Length: 77
Image (cartoon, rainbow, N blue to C red; front, side, top):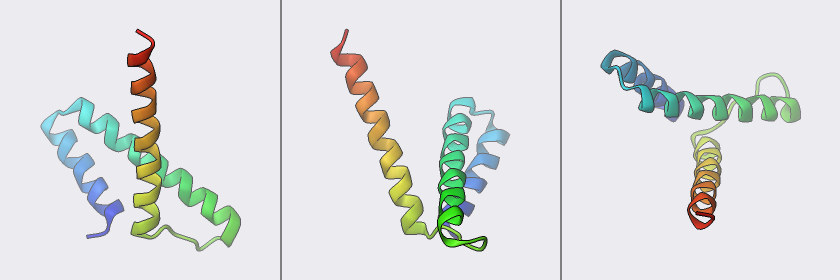
């Protein structure tokens, strides 16, 4: 199963289980993937899609942003 499809399935499971926090995170991941897809289409053309490797790279970048933000919040307290 492709990574994007797995995230979609996880969203459905989180909805059914009533896991609001997990659902919010997964929707954020979907948003990042969609934004990167739009960015790639603007550069490459109308039929461009992201590979699993590109998705993993985009999610890793977002994770690094969150780690830095949480570290800054802790260091300023």
